[in-house]
Image (cartoon, rainbow, N blue to C red; front, side, top):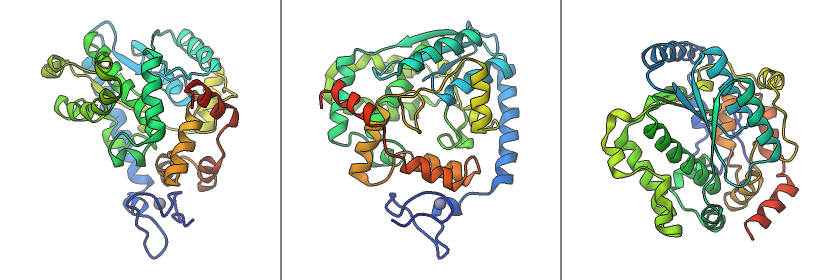
Length: 330
Ligand SMILES: [Zn+2]
């Protein structure tokens, strides 16, 4: 299979175009590392200004959507130690969180002194959605460029369950641990627009509602909540504008008591469903669901092309794939 000469995107990636030198359209529109550095500095200042405006206005300054993985663990460190924010840590339990991940969540929230909540939807509902997602696409074709259908389901629930908590608790910022490949810098600090988010909610809630009916309602915003624009928080992705060096991140996390789970694959440091979800996506579309994210990290110099290629060609973890199949009865 032909790959971009600069990043790791393959020729069968949706809507990709290569130039004469073999570089893809995404690499050709990248403005270079110097420009990225300037943008990062500007967004870092922008975040400091926003904190000045919002700090201390409620019981918490921000939520953190916390999977217990490496990136969101490091984001918790940044929020607490670099910006000294009062954080409410929110963890979504999809029924596939590894044991080591629970230990990591306990260690980091204790060592960084944050309150923590776990939201675990009724597993029979999740199971119906995951089983459906195994067999067919549920969302717009565009979502398939960024993640497997199973991952998109989890992230969709996480986005709206936690947004609802933030609105109900009047928390003015929601932080996310998106890696620099997942969150473009231009959207790393953004006040949530209710009208746009209503469209996003419909795109996820409607297909889920077809599978599980009204049981889906508690996980999304009500029409009344959408009507009050003032209570909508800012979405913040600090890793998009902070320095991101995987080795330094792991070193810092180790000091804080975080340990790498042994039972997950190289692209997820927390989820036991990930390998299975990736495998289904690769079998169906013939490219890795993390290819876009990893291509962006290669392009922006976060990792080398060789490291990126290793990440998207590493086979899934057989034991966790078997575990996922059993738990979903597939
Ligand atoms: Zn490329």
